[in-house]
Amino acid sequence: MTTIAAPHVPPRGQRCDGTSLPPNVVTAILVFLAHRRDSTMSGTHEKPTLGRRGFLRLSATLGLAGISSKILGLLPSHPIQAQEAAMSKTVLSFYCDDTSPYGRPPEAFKTFLDFVSSQGIAGESSVILGIGGALLSRPTSDAQRTYIEQVQRAFDCGIDANMELMTHGGLYDFKEHRVPEDAPHEGLWLHEPAVSVEDYESYFGHILEEGEQIGVKFTGVTWPGCGCEVCTRRYAELRQAGITAVNPNVGRALLNLARQGKFRRRTVPCFIHPDESFSGARLMASDGPYAVYDLIANVGDWLGSYDNTPARVNADYYISADGSAGRIVDLVHAGAPYAVFYAHWQGLNPATGVGWRAFTEVIARVKRFLGDRVTWMRPSDITEQYHAPRAETA
Ligand SMILES: [Zn+2]
Ligand SMILES: [Zn+2]
Image 1: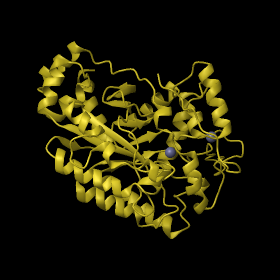
Image 2: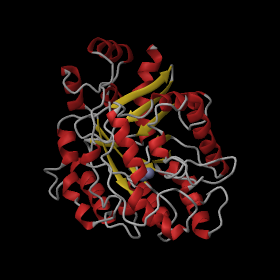
Image 3: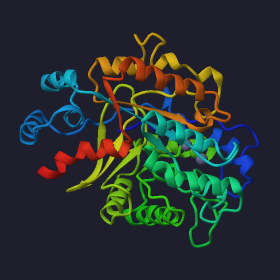
């Protein structure tokens, strides 16, 4: 079970239909479309189904130690896990939503990747191939070309690529190569109960093919949030009908594509909702070594967020200047399997983001005070490790 956003009302005159717009407008729209992944978005998730007996058996069979056993044993109250947690490291990772080549100097993404690589950290950054209706597979500007070059090196720098679907707006028509005026928005469409596995698989498959055209192999999927009036109204209707989560056919479709080798890894991490009360990966679909997980972000966004506001910047929220307090510190000291935070490119980017300095400060503090207690992993590495023992015993 997840809770659908209580979306906000869009600013007057702003459009949210995903039709073709100049790139400089896209950035402003993204601020408006972007996720409300704060407290209004938190929901309850079913916990992983690996029971105590299964955990003990797997631990014994596989001789698990350190990180992988910790990820495997996402059972916070279990004494074995608590014991192992004390001996092993907490995994750190992050999602960065809404990344795009628009609205900032083209080298902003390069600066970000260079920093990630030089610090030895790892995470994820969304790739939205048709944002604003402009296709990255048909680049028309140097900014797009520069971004594509960087996206191609992202994985080697430690950064996964989640599709935040095709447009982060209206559903794209891959035959007509446009977004119809009345197209439903992609995030909402993921929740519509009548959509079939085949329809989702076809749509995601087209996006994966678009990615291949520019040399991007996707790792996962991020739910594109939207607070437009149409989505707000429809989300309310769905809630009233008891539908508060993504259509299960989404997971089945992603699994089919993973089995065909269309994703970079055999497991597909998804970022659907954050939940600070839960550290774990919620299984969406699996078949042997292939699996789709909702890898839940358990640390909030205080890096400027989608509206790039200084009021939403607070490095101390993650880790205080003396390393004694903060959300990441708490999770590490509690022996949590991981601390996954999320951010938005609007606030995080090194060119115009008000959260960039805080981001680099957090990384420096973690290194200084928690360096021997944590290890950085991209989301797809987390799900690969998490799923491996399950696949072997399936
Ligand atoms: Zn987004
Ligand atoms: Zn919408």
